[in-house]
Length: 126
Image (tube, rainbow, N blue to C red; front, side, top):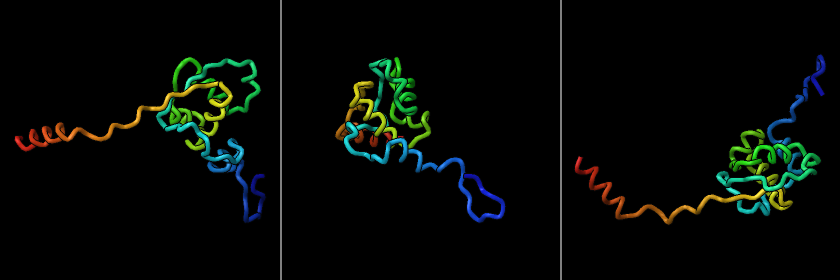
C-alpha cells in the first residue's frame, strides 16, 4: 500500500530487510543447519526437473552453484539475503539431496610458539 495524500503513515512497497528473510524461511531460524559456515562451499549435484517447481530462492541457489562451488557468503550476497536465511535455505537443499557442501577445515590450535619467537627475534635485530 502506498502513502495517501494527507496520511501520516505510509507503507513502502518493500517490506524491509528483515521481513523478507523471515518470509523466505517461513519463520524458521538456525536449527539443524549442518554446521554451515560463511566459508562453506556448496555445489549442486542434481539437476532435478522438479527444481523449476522450487521457490524462487531455492531455484536461484541451484542456478548459482551449478557446476562450480560457491560459498554461503557469496550466495547471501547474490540473493541479497541475510546469512542466517541463506543457511536455512541451503540446509533445506542439502536435506532434499539437491546440493552437497564442504565446510572449511577447522582452525589450527594456534600459531607455533617457536615460529613466533623466531619472528620476534628477527624484528628485534632490525
